[in-house]
Image: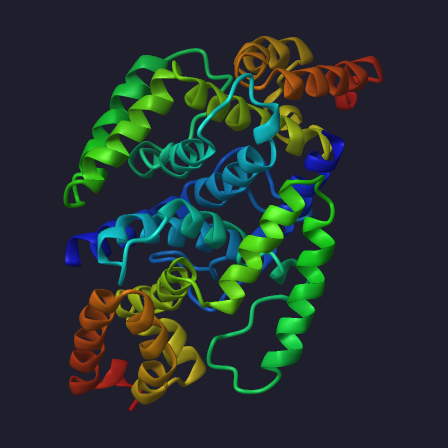
Length: 193
Length: 193
């Protein structure tokens, strides 16, 4: 029992890992813990739009653990172009440490979920990635492009970076987002281009 | 698709609903969104200690939606003695509004999960309640009794209020917590008694 308690208290640190989006109406950046909650519910809500029949419960479990490595590494914007491999190695070391706090079988189970997400090969992992890539876009479209404005991200970079994974895991979501992004691009990309 | 997007953006408001605990090492109160994430993982980690065989995926789904009504009502400390029924009626109205933003079948599914949690009759709902009641205690025991100190909550009130639901849903967790709380009581209950 103490191992599980120590693990859960370790997870508290993810509440202090900040991302690039601000929650709507709040004057702070969101953290990776509340982000993980929100995309689990986004996945659940979107399940009928997955590209194939999926096990939604495994998707949710993957999304709940996918950012835990950031406890040691911090969050990196998806548009970062350098250091991706080093970052992934550091995250693997982090989750090995953190999941290693748990007894079996949970330790192996959480590690398998984390690796499945990273490898992005199963329909469940592809769906999970689609949802993870979509949420900053959904928040930005509702928030005058906040994180893209603050980081100077163009329409072209957004479409190149998030289009393929969203299309692969949840085609209908990409059809929706592509149209919303194109409309925003036509009307001035939040005034920064 | 737009209905789902509107629902997810509405959920962003739960990131602004504050609770009584502070995340370890952070100078702010935790919010109900990150709390929901943490207890979903606590439930997952504790599954072998449930009082009977349970469907852990339904537990996780319940925990992800159980606080959504607070978007309209705010969080109330579990030790509040008055207004509980009015509060529950207000939360029901809130989730009826918020889940009502979704198309079927998700609307009915989320409402069923929320009601199952509130009624606390199934083994899954009892386990979910045990976890939800345990997390403030786990955080307080690691944080010098922070929320109990700030709200003047005695050892006796903690044991009376959280003991029965934790014992009912996850007996081994209560054995652990009862001993930790008794030890803290013996040594001075965080200096406030």
